[in-house]
Image (cartoon, rainbow, N blue to C red; front, side, top):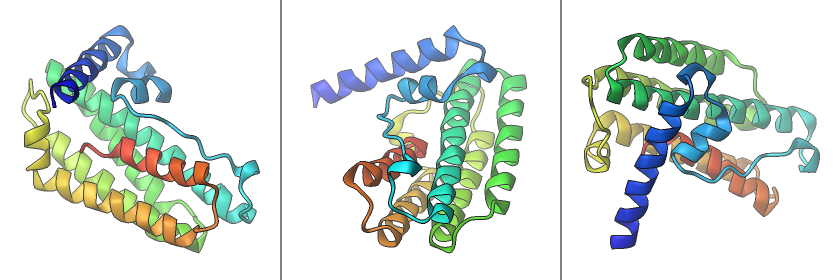
Length: 187
């Protein structure tokens, strides 16, 4: 329990350092994952035995979730630092990402997961917009916030849909499904 608390404090310190070190707009996906911190197992279409339409749809979906992870980290930093201009930029980024993800053509096997990711992104945006300046994102409060808990359930549902649609994928790719969606989740 103490080790987990120490790990949480270390993660918050890393998140703060990463957000302070670089301009928010310049944050890379790798920096965002490191700031959370979360493992990032990549989906590699050439290594998948899936038809091109399916593997390309998964690749697009995960590119969208990566963008969502960056926005989540940037938004948390902007709110915590009281940066209204950066918060607006992040909220606008959410709007664009939601629309792009919602309208992206996907293979039928990926559509259910895509739709659940869109709903989760909408809830993340709503949650971020509702937080006061200086909000520190305490885990206990996150878990009890309806938008966050509902978004988490949507992301879990997206993972379940992908596992059901692609049961023959390699363990590495199944792990990538989890990592992309879990990193997007506030919980």
